[in-house]
Image 1 (cartoon, rainbow, N blue to C red):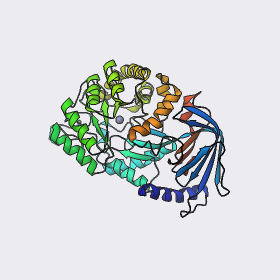
Image 2 (image 1 turned 45 degrees about the vertical axis):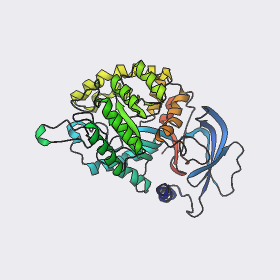
Image 3 (image 1 turned 90 degrees about the horizontal axis):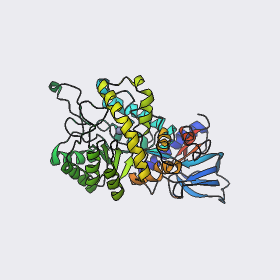
Length: 431
Ligand SMILES: [Zn+2]
């Protein structure tokens, strides 16, 4: 909490410079937002003519009959739709799209942290006031999170994983160079002892959440998305150790078997879930496991694959998973499995994250459910349901606005006109 307050003070200075708002750090400034429409995620209702009263970084009151103090700064969003700041539980801020493969080996970890600073800003201005970054080299994402919290750079609130745990030769290993280079991915751990050690090491260096690869993936060389990577026993050790240390577990899982074994091991979320089958869906519903569908890249890659200049092994794997993934996601959405919004931004350009709302609706989720996936559900998965995800008294004033009604046209979320994080305005009008 201390670091969050520090962030707000630092950002207030910035916001004052940008917008000329006179603010005193001793007496928290009061802001009143007039909202023409306001989306309330818990009920799924669109409320009319609401006022949101904000004191400092926190929402103080919301309603249609709110008394506005005389010294309050008024922000008029009466012609817009106001929503809780968007939440993305699957980003890769420290990577740029198309920077994988051998080319990626030329980017140092410090450089990746700075790439992260660029992308954090882009992501915040796209309306995402909170992200969970799942997979970065070394602890570049920890540095980014801390820099944002200290007010050194602009970006969303972050939870970070550090390096993704992976088997030797798996999705998180470095499989590009021949043996004589002895190159190994930062998160590689085999067998219960190494896995326990790696989970503890990631936590030691700042991980809020543990990410691991239960199956192969597409952006990596030599591993197979159709096969399970870790054994069920290894996954159980990993999840129980993370949970013992108070960390949630996100698993990259493509193959049907890897999804089921990860769910049985107790993971909190299945990311991608490409070959999710009926049994996997039942298990997830039974255990309340979240699906993080990362569905927008399925559409984006259908249209933009060639411009990405991907290695052939990645292109082949993407072509193989695209049709299956769309079918699995549609089936999962119909089944009512719990869904949290995650984009995999970084495998496609940052800032397009809100396309995920559109693609989830395209695959059968209702607009209300898609909005809940990117608000209350994402907050719940992150364990931050008490601080973000709704516009309610006591929560951080993380608020965005769009022109138009997303319940009629979900694509309006891809053009936010207003972004506030912790009571500080970062975007207004057509900036
Ligand atoms: Zn990812």
